[in-house]
Image (cartoon, rainbow, N blue to C red; front, side, top):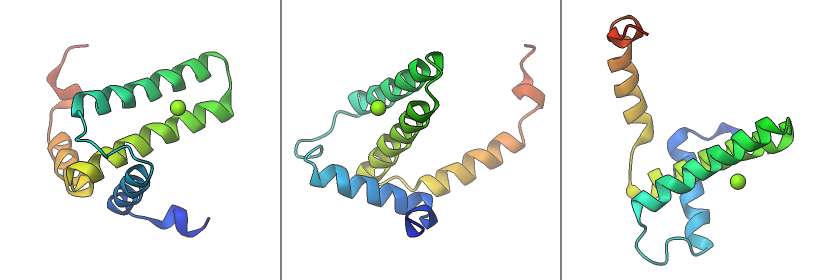
Length: 102
Ligand SMILES: [Mg+2]
């Protein structure tokens, strides 16, 4: 279990995508919109677990969000570490509350 937590984000993408492929979820070309909505459903499941104050399930559903997101990044060949660095730098240089009033 120790090594499971030592992966980089891109290694998690490769790992989650490999498992999803092995389980047949990439046998046909993936519909990206559908994949994104499945990530949203995991967030909705997390919300429901939060409403029920079911902390173990809440944490599990958040893990599902990441697993589906990493799978999608892996499947699309996205270097998510690079993208996070770029967007984080962009956000760092944005104005307070990104220039919004509320
Ligand atoms: Mg789930």
